[in-house]
Image (cartoon, rainbow, N blue to C red; front, side, top):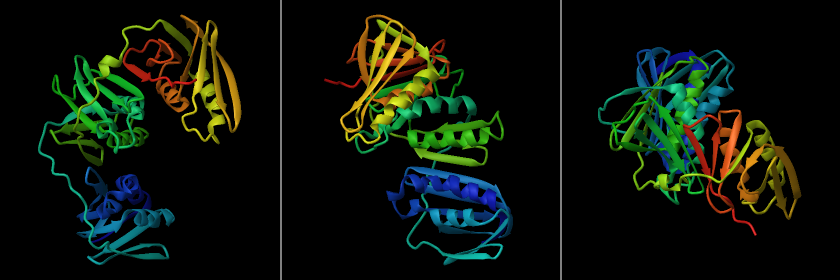
Amino acid sequence: MKFRTERDGLLEALVTAGRVSAARVGAGLGAQNVRLTLRGDQLEVVGSDPDLVIEVACVVNGEQDGAVLMPSRLATDIIRSFDPGIVSVEANDQEARVISGRAEFVVRTPIGAEITRLAVAESKKITLPAALFAEGLQQVVRAALNDDTRAPQLTGVLMIAVDNGIRLVATDSYRLAFRDLKGVNALEPGSEVLVPARALAEIQRLIGAEGEKEHDAKLVFCHTELDAVFEVHDVCLTTRLLKGPFPDYQRLLPPSYPNMFRVGREELAAAIRRVRLMMRDAKEAATPVRVSFEADGAGLTVLTAESGRADERVDGQFSGEELVVAFNPNYLLDGVEAIRAEIVILEVIDSSKPATIRGEGEDDYRYLLMPVRVS
């Protein structure tokens, strides 16, 4: 294999495909490598592990077709170290020679490693509005579980068909978020798929990167019973779907709330960020923020044995019975930051039942949060 190309384009392809290995280093030898395949002037860079494959296509000046497997992190760091300009790559079964300017690297081909390629059956491809889908992911993916050793199905986002589009749902059992994407008909009526949040986070990142270049970017989606495929411009992401019972989230939604707090989003978010500074040196990671709801506002308090105490009051409109509810401050901030509206509405029942965060005038997004029990 032999080709020449601009550094920046090759670096972008390596970084994108290499995110698979960056996220799952322990997934085996293949997950720590990327495969470069040249056909004519088309270079394909592939990173994978057993559950996720990212393929990036880019145009180069091809001289000799072929393929090579390279260590992902090392290849990326080498290309990043070069000054902007032309990079030459020549490879055989044993090594890859990478040259730019006066710098030359000879990289050994990994032995006993291979790249996973998921075999996906043909299915109907659907074009989705990329910006809207990315906005929904930004609001929902944050609520998915990060640790797949406890409940693997909670590390996914449920995409379910509803009457007027699709609904995205995620929960880690302490919080839950859902967003309705109206008019987006990506699934057959009554059907649902459980997509790993890790894969959707990559889709969100890819759409965001492309959105800077082209506001009306399109996302192509298709799925089978086992896999889902997403295509954004020159990037194709294939992921295994998750299996297992997803929680019946509908029963967690209270029919009404007796207490409601209306407050500016930025004011509340800034106050949470300040008071949680007291948690930096706290030995107890679950140190809560106590929110005291009163008629003309709310008081926020974080108290730690190591660092001390932080108090701040935010003005707002509260209707209901005055009470104090404690929350995980990081989870609370996540919910507030996910709101698009300038005014946030925080609805609570009491100190032990789920609270809801939503934006004023927005009926397509909800963020539910379990309070923290405090003595």
